[in-house]
Length: 52
Figure 1 (tube, rainbow, N blue to C red):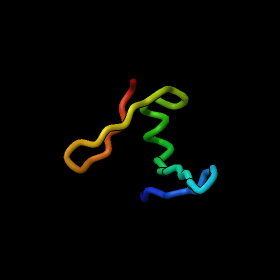
Figure 2 (cartoon, rainbow, N blue to C red):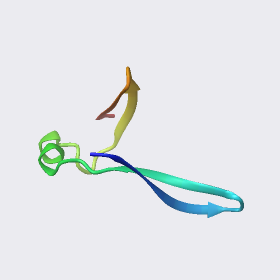
Figure 3 (cartoon, one colour):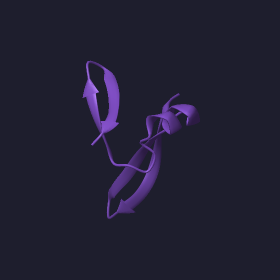
Figure 4 (tube, rainbow, N blue to C red):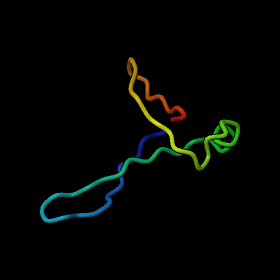
C-alpha cells in the first residue's frame, strides 16, 4: 500500500491536497468501521486509525 497525494482545490494562491490510502476490502469489512467517524494518530512512526 502507499499514501497518495491528490490535488483538491485552489483558493487564491493556496493549493489544498487530500491524502488517500487504499485499504484491503476484507480488513475494512471486518473492522466494522465502514461509514463511521474515525480518528487517526501517529505513534512511534506508525499511523493508527481507531474508532472515535
